[in-house]
Image (cartoon, rainbow, N blue to C red; front, side, top):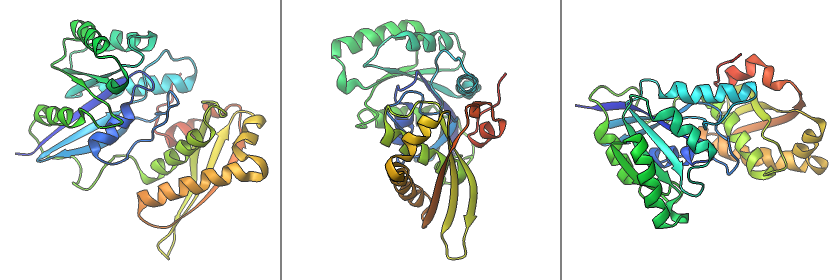
Length: 296
């Protein structure tokens, strides 16, 4: 009998959820960045373990929402937990029980779904602190298992995957064996470009920016032409993205093109342009483009 189940990965911003999902899948399906709240969409990574298919929901970080985009992201995270076969509750060992982690615990401790406590970044925390943190959280969550991992190095990830596979219910697989994510190529292409924005601009570019794929043409020669729009809120931010003489956007485009071409497995022609739109967060169409629900 085959087995298939849904696992929602919940955590505060920057806890390492996307890195863990990528590690469990065995290939990059979600973008990562040291910048908090990098994940916006509720993306599913598909992991295989023998005859088991594990559907991993990489959810946006849970935090106190303020703006419309924040509310949509937090709603996507909590919606992802509904009817999951297991909740992976991920805590950053480096920050411990800060305000955001406390908010997460308050939201999950009384949920009915079986929980697995995962303490991440154990390679940079003291062992004595880890044990005390695990005991404190276990008393609140009553998890069926606790795992100490480093999602970046892979330490402990195989044991977690074994546990998840054993916990999944019997049933048919929901996706073909060679499919790694439920995200469309169009969505992934936009995410890969956004990842390069964060990677190359670091703290220079504020969180309030977005990438939308405007045009996608599969050409007769086997290549794909993609035109994307980078949206920012102010002219000063546009200047940062463009760089001197357009040097920065050229570097971002070249790095993103390579990532997208590797994902698609074919040559890519990528064209980027920057639009200043102080109210881009009010664009319903953009929410649909990045897979979020419009919230009031």
